[in-house]
Image: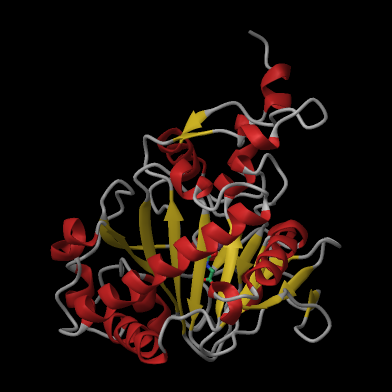
Length: 354
Ligand code: OGA
Ligand code: NI
């Protein structure tokens, strides 16, 4: 008797002894897991946010600025999101993905324009090779516009995720204020540049993989949004491309969040701060949950380098675009090493024949 092919990876992975061919990368683009700097040999900066709202603010702002300039990635402690909010978020995420296939499939869609959906890989409609991941995507701001679309099961899901999303938004706004100041801009400048703002969440589920050296949870990519706040369970998987061109494994520290600059802050900062390549590898023993919060401009926001950061020596590196245009481009091209940023660069546009 033949079984119907499973739609979600979790249900494929449960039965697979080998990695199915549609997930196998060509030899030249496999992760090469032995050639990665383990944490301890290299790492991303750790920033303590305790003094961000006190007399020590200037020093914290400076530490954030230096992390954004040098690494594009940093971890934060004392970020203000209570432990129980984090624990509940991770608990309902795990419970969601442990539900029977029939319950999970109620949320399934491969249409990236849907505001709430469960899907698999990255863009199942367009890509040639799959990624070893299922993911639930939710819009989180304004909360009341989307809450009713979210999964009704497990029963604690909506309340726990809403509580986390409100806290994550508060933290994103504090970080954007600090990043603005670190660029020499008014505290509110970046938030104002994002227009009405949007907040998306992914709940990523990476099942154990029988042959982790053949595939990725997510291949190398840069995040298209403004800033990302990543919550992870205790299982490693995230790797960040260091300045020396080597991959750094970021070991999750329970309770800490990993923050990274997305493409929009690279543009708004006129390349002062970099959106950095990162990827997710999988392992053969443990499933992994991660919860990135993508803080974004609203689709109609016009994005261009901050006028205060443009002068004769550093002319505008990008032409203006709307975030909606950028985001469509991101989903359509799929995850690949060349980021979409280059499409909007002044230098590249000049090379194009009229
Ligand atoms: C992402 C991402 C990292 C992770 O979803 O864009 O980079 O650890 N996730 O899941
Ligand atoms: Ni990412």
